[in-house]
Length: 300
Ligand SMILES: Cc1cc2nc3c(=O)[nH]c(=O)nc-3n(C[C@H](O)[C@H](O)[C@H](O)COP(=O)(O)O)c2cc1C
Image 1 (tube, rainbow, N blue to C red):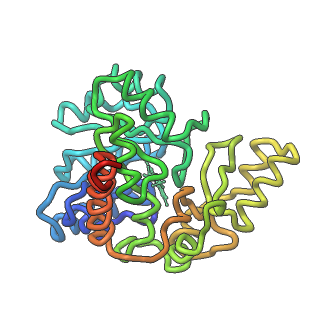
Image 2 (image 1 turned 30 degrees about the vertical axis):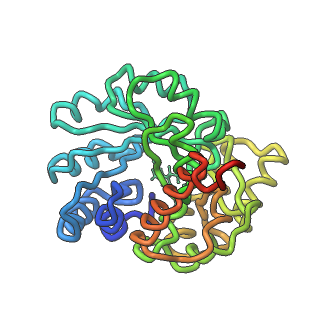
């Protein structure tokens, strides 16, 4: 996650038994190298790097990732076909983020090892078709033979169990980890997540790339402009530059972009990544017991 997932969060997640990812989307290649090296000092466990393929300097980010020996890469926002040969030649496991069956099949056909299927409940940039996680996961799971990682709206063990019931092999969790102690986001942003209710987010900037944000002044301005028929160029001008940095990293909760998912309403406190994973596993076990009927009295 941009501005959240540096070495500290990736290593904390890895140490807790999850697969931590460093979010290269908000890093220059030199900074990415620093974070990869620091992450290695903080954990003995595997971790990966998320690379948004839309980045102008994507070749340099890939080079930095490979030269530092990272062998797990999650790609998003772009076409993995353009880079798959380079990744495979380096022995990298490649996971691509998709938001429709069509794109899942395409990713599989070019040779990615797994897909993250992300519903539009998710925080941050979204697919254009607005498919919910609940509808997307079973359809993608039925369509592909590679593993499916469910994302969007999962922040506790019940959500994890539900995703697995729907056919996912694993889950990717964003918003819940964005508001952990190890997230490098600003305290104001983390607090905005913990104060959010179920209706606190909105999908906006649909004429550019849809993004789910907490409904602050900036998000409401973009919505109003879109409703008033603003052109993509006008929206681009309104967006300006560095909005994500301003909101998530610098803590401008009124005028910055506060990327967060609908599940923010369930995130009530800022806890460690280890605690998130511990709670999720416990809740998952309880959810599975409930599905098995173990918690019901005999005869019911
Ligand atoms: C603050 C923030 C930044 C994100 N940045 C990225 C990113 O750089 N690359 C990416 O593939 N996904 C990004 N995401 C999406 C997450 O990786 C994840 O798929 C999503 O948050 C899952 O949905 P959830 O927020 O409901 O847990 C971001 C999400 C958030 C909340």
